[in-house]
Image (cartoon, rainbow, N blue to C red; front, side, top):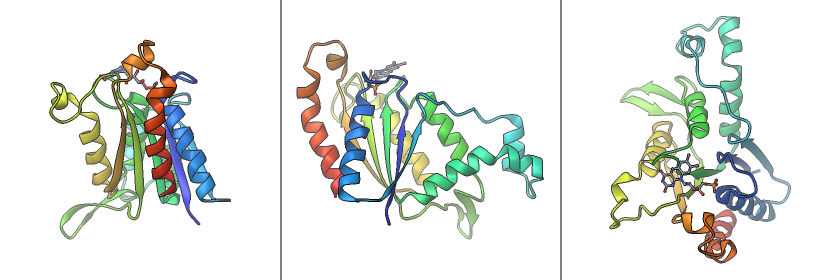
Length: 206
Ligand SMILES: Cc1cc2nc3c(=O)[nH]c(=O)nc-3n(C[C@H](O)[C@H](O)[C@H](O)COP(=O)(O)O)c2cc1C
């Protein structure tokens, strides 16, 4: 039975474009997978703690003590969630050319030696296999190939890089760009979203 991991990282609620698109994805995915489980994490509204000195010591401890294991409890829960899900949908606004800190806090919790990456015969290797990921990437500006700001998109290369590091390489980006015109009321939100929703729903049902 398939399981979906659904993450939102916008601090906004009803105004959030990434949230409205991940909601469409989840609804379409549930329709296509009746009775299947969805694990949701609202990183934007319920932020995770940053990793601490104790966390780092525990994560790299060769034989974690009970206290170190307790320090890693949340990290272990988050890793269990991503391992349990074969399909992930990530709602990701662009913040300052990259990912929101709320999402980066999740990344720091889940990139763990011995759990999501390890050292194999050929060096570092990702341990997370068989996942398909859809990233719904929303930005105020436009960073498409051939446009003046193309080189300033640190979000997509970063996300592909860090997911690849843990072994997740089947990653699709659905881009909703130029949303400043929606946010500032220059273009109608529903008309802007309609073609992107179609892509989102098609991906969820694929
Ligand atoms: C703190 C902050 C930083 C932002 N940085 C960028 C940026 O670097 N590039 C960009 O194109 N848009 C940027 N934006 C615009 C957001 O990507 C845009 O408003 C998007 O709609 C936010 O996602 P949401 O609608 O799901 O909340 C930024 C917005 C905020 C609030």
